[in-house]
Length: 147
Image: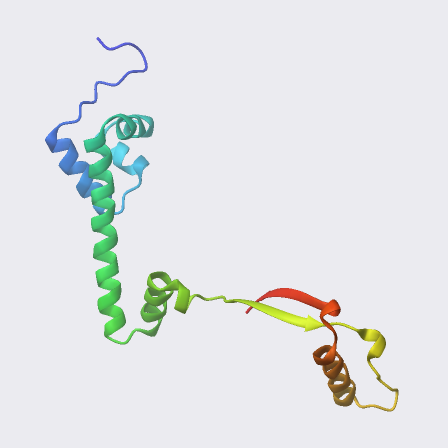
């Protein structure tokens, strides 16, 4: 009889195939444990100690991801714009990410900004913009903004 806290769970070829199938269907470790009739801790223990068990989970997860990716790709090819955006932002994030970081350099030298009370808002903004463009390198401020 096993000591208290140890499991009678034995990894067989049948268990490996079942685990791979379950992981391929998107089940979590906890859900896989439930189907196998063991605790989540037992699943993690065997995953850490048994390379074949860990590989079965990874292989199943990869198959599941592949199935969904192929379905998404097929949907995207048929013209589903949301699927297209999702696919591209996840498969090619360097070119299709939602947010881009922009490095912007501005010059500040408010002492030399000639804004008069008689100027319109547009004229004042233009004068300030000219000051920023023509400032010296000592007055450069680097900003990182997200689009």
